[in-house]
Image (tube, rainbow, N blue to C red; front, side, top):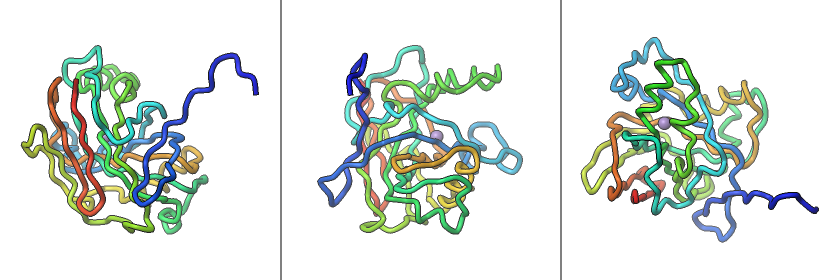
Length: 228
Ligand code: MN
């Protein structure tokens, strides 16, 4: 096929135990999925249910590494999250069938321009500039369900320059993984290659150039980024 411009590359993630890679289609993210994080952001978890938003496909940074401090912000935040990688999709996926769509799991950081997000909230504007910027979605290699099962109550943590900043447990999620998949599939067709960031526990905060961020989910994997 002759194209008028080069065909954009599809980002891929490495897979533990395989030489084959996972091609990324869309990236969805759940907001306000841990009650303690809702409270630290000034919200009421009993009145503000989780919701979802997206990041562009090419914001993914496979395996982490060096990330350029983004322009147009002076308050870049980390948010460690369990990432679900789908091998099947559909619309209106029942909760009871949702885990059958999961290929595997990874650790990701939902990098956020917190100052721009606050401005968007104030003005009722979209979150794209706060959430969907270049390199805003570093993701670890994927651990397939065939190797790691479905993690349900593992510790999820993040440290900056060796100091622990976030520590929670996947069991604290308001919407569990099957509910997240079922909910999103009521609004869009999910498909193989989709990634879903499932929300962050409390302890989010700023990072600056030179900071080394390490995070992980026990029994699943770890991810490291360095801001440059
Ligand atoms: Mn997030």
